[in-house]
Amino acid sequence: MADVSPTQIEEAIKGYTDPYLEKDLVSAKAVKDIKVDGNKAIVDVVLGYPAEGYKAELAEKLKEKITAVEGIDDAEINVTSKIEAHTAQKGVEPIKGVKNIIAVASGKGGVGKSTTSVNLALALAAEGATVGILDADIYGPSQPRMLGISQQPESKDGKTLEPLENHGIQSMSIGYLIDEETPMIWRGPMVTQALEQLLNDTNWKDVDYLVIDLPPGTGDTQLTLAQKVPVTGAVIVTTPQDIALLDARKGLKMFEKVEVPVLGIIENMSIHICSNCGHEEHIFGAGGGERMAEENDVDLLGALPLDKSIRETTDSGAPSVVADPEGRIAQIYRDIARRVAAKLSLKSKDYSASFPKIVIQNN
Figure (tube, rainbow, N blue to C red):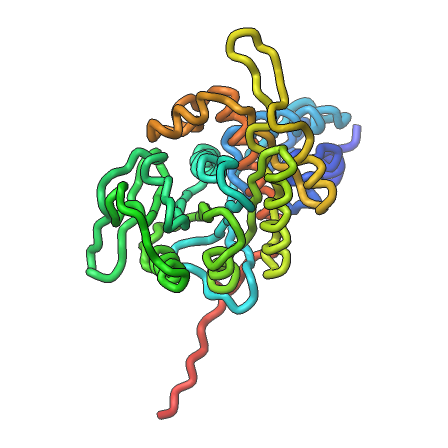
């Protein structure tokens, strides 16, 4: 019997399509090494997205494919993740300590965007990434309550702020600097300046993904973000009813105009399941997010039910992903997080940090 070559193993791996990358791991350049030792294959896979909740399943699926090769009885699959910085809009400086920025937006309020933002951030952390969240809603900051944080951030040098941490993620919000009851009576320029300061003057610590919870709409804050902040990708949150979808489309078009890629759509409150009888009802209509995704050629990243526990856990300062990590809701958020990060991993990498800065001095 002839020895099995690494090429044969590679061909077997090509037979498995990664559900998050939506392509095989060889094409995605995730297979880094293949060794054949007698009748055993040893394969090193390095994913460009965090995948703690998926690694074991992936290893098992690849093992099935590889051990189907004649002459191979066993396979050792080593799956790790390496998160790179990816390109943002041209001419925008990167933020110190941050690799990738994900903007979470909605066309209108009340669709659960802040709840989605915090659970997405917590889900990315649960999958193994270092994560931060910036509450960009200056008028109605929600993240301090959702993360269960009430103290003020420290400033070690009198110029910059230390992010506050809870549930394993870093965070910053105007809500940490003002009283919860105090309304922000500011004009647009003050708001955009505050946003820039919160973003640039926070000492983010080696963050793989910074999730920005945007205020609803397509106004000053969103424009500042698009023009001055290096956004790697945007996620649009909507509910299935037509009026929400109408406004969500505006958000999507805004990002397209400023050349920020839309990674996909998350449909919130998509179905209600009665806690007493189990009856399922589409209170806000059905299939809206899916239609919008198809019409605009973007992905539907996931759909979340209208569930009382999502509201209760978030209000209590321990959102679904940390309150019930093994529960169905947490698993949906983690699946969405893997999808978002995988979409980002396929974008071109940002090599600016690798190049030396050339300074010309007149002596």
